[in-house]
Image 1: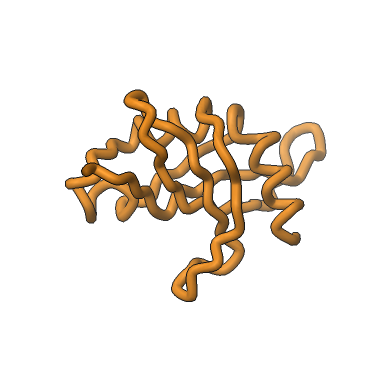
Image 2: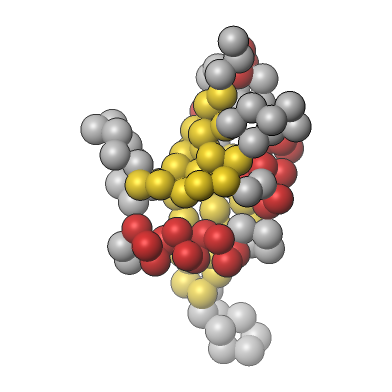
Length: 108
């Protein structure tokens, strides 16, 4: 799946799918002031641009989402989509999750 497909899928499912927040996104940098709950809310209800993750250290297939927090500061969330093949009672076999691998904001 290319970036355009991942972006479209993210925008379609972000309000209704499971969101997993990596411990690194909030615990490794407490000075950024994120809680797991805030990060989930930023993903579910936030609006902002979505770009490719061009960092040389980036996680394969990750991308960046730039929502604004409650004080209108732009945040940068590193997003990864995960698809798990599980067949439900109706024969559907895809279940998707959004994983937030990192979260950044300027505290200055």
